[in-house]
Image 1 (tube, rainbow, N blue to C red):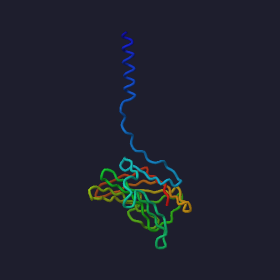
Image 2: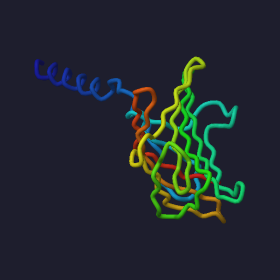
Image 3: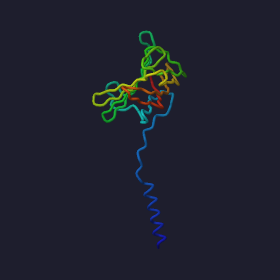
Image 4: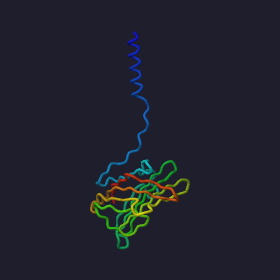
Length: 178
């Protein structure tokens, strides 16, 4: 009888262990793809940043690569809005000819062949902007550019500063329809 009780307790323990509560797994980034899936994601200070929130005021993800004033211009915009906190990541260049396979330095300004990177975080009408502050504190790599199919894909990383605070953006990836 004792053996049956021990066996029964062992079975109960195994069942309880296998059905115990599990912590929610952290949000995963989208896969790195190159076929215009309209995906964007990265880690901001170790936490997943994915486009989300209401589609008002410009939506949550947008990319434009077009001719402006006789020069090619790039703008990638992604917004994450949760619980009253809005985060944005922008890449902007006013004079750039993108080349598939090329890696570009991220800068605080949008000079020729450079791309401006901005991270913004806002809560209760207070917005703090973070900028890349020196030439090699970030890179954006173009893995696919197909203007005819309107596809722009790549990866990125950067460190940005605001009033002495630093934010680390890592493992960034995008696969966008232009």
